[in-house]
Length: 173
Image (cartoon, rainbow, N blue to C red):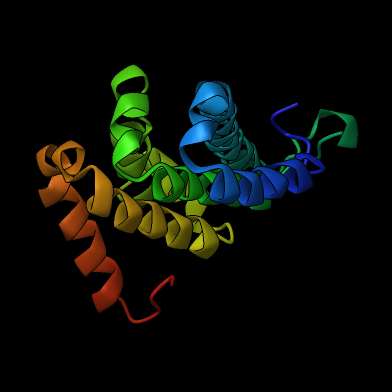
């Protein structure tokens, strides 16, 4: 399951594996990337739904049966998935362009991680989001080294997000 935090150990093993295997990892890269993307998307959706429910409980003073409560998102799982994507970019180096031609996870994820929509920002605002942003900035850095052409179209938005974080009273990284 993409919500099962026991998958963290597997993702961490893949990080070590991709670092050692380099371009040989290309054969299975697509499946691993799809799993990481699924984890990230599911965690964001779960966060928004969880935040909506918690907000409704607070605002309406609702007593809810614990069976109906949504689970809190697994932020550590998402952070590990982002770190694995950074490892893939780093290990594949210039060969990452082949993978991105099939699935451009860089431009799919970076804007959502570093400059989220207002609804997502509100949902993740109460979460331990620092690790996720830090992992997003790491993915941005690795991507800038090997696939800067993918970042160029969204660079203004990402630079603004970087500056907003650096200038914040409590930077998240």
